[in-house]
Amino acid sequence: MAAKTRDKKTMVSASELAQMGACERLVLFEARYGKRMSRCQQEAIERGRTEHDKFFKDGVRSQSDVQTSLSKPWCFCASLAWGPEAPETDLLRRFRDRILRRTAAGRGLIRVYYRTAPGLCRRLEGRRKLIRALCLGLKPALWIAKAALAIQEQKERA
Amino acid sequence: MTTGGFLLLILPAIAGLMAWKMARSWRARASERHWLPQELQHAQLAFAEKTFRTWQPIRLIARADRGYRLNGELHLAEFKTRTRAVAYSSDVIELSAQRLVIEKSTGERVSEIGYVLAQDLSGKRRSVHKVRLLPRADVIALARRREAILKGRIVPRYTSSQGLCSHCAYRAECRPGQRDCG
Image (cartoon, rainbow over all chains, first blue to last red; front, side, top):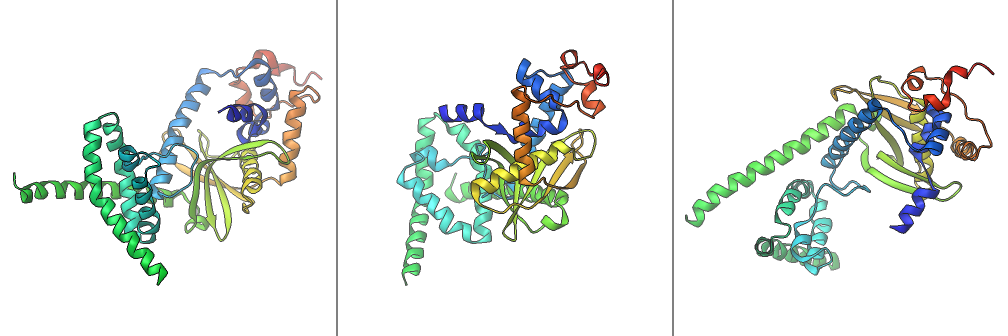
């Protein structure tokens, strides 16, 4: 966090640099008097943010394994049920990366899961009984993942 | 309710949900294909809204809207909402700075051609503008000029854009009326 703040202070961003192409005096005045915006500029920025957000979501919907620095618009049920570093979560992650991601149908399934999981996780958060039910519900997925990974490893060894 | 009855109820519901989600994903992909320029139609979306940092040759940080990988090269795209369907010089600078940061931080080659996707205010019309990015030396020189302006070593230039000037919140301090007085 401290490193991030330090970076922000000492680094120049691409968008700050881009301002030089719009107006050099604006760069100086913003640094001297602080950021000041007219009402229409504020509205334009707000509108831009909303559209940017839609554009970002379109991108990750069209390709689920895209890299991003923003918090991804999905979360994992397994992380909620067992914790992000739990062996069960790790097993399902390996199943996703080694088995599902290799086929078109698997990638489709990942996409569907990524679309469905966030809403479900948001509803379950903090509800212990429902999370326990989720653990039970995910057990068959764990068994399938374990068996599929074992077969895969055997094939790779052979 | 029997297990069979329960499954008869739940399975179509799950199938319906999956179909809806897949349709949404296809729609997103179709929307992507719609605006993507011909040369990027088969490119893979490598990153979206990803932040990159470099400390050399200048301390620069950039968040790229989109990066597409094609034939071992990255192609950058910047999304803008604006009334006029044009690419400004500030867009070119932003993409050029992103290119410098990405090349320095990842070692990957970034194309010297970038794309500005301008969307109108209604959100219905999009236009893509192909731009040639600035050489790395120009980006570094611009960053140094900015630094010199902020330290008061260089007098900053007035903008040539009347529209930008007329809506600026610093008109009182800037006094653009005196720009031609010497």
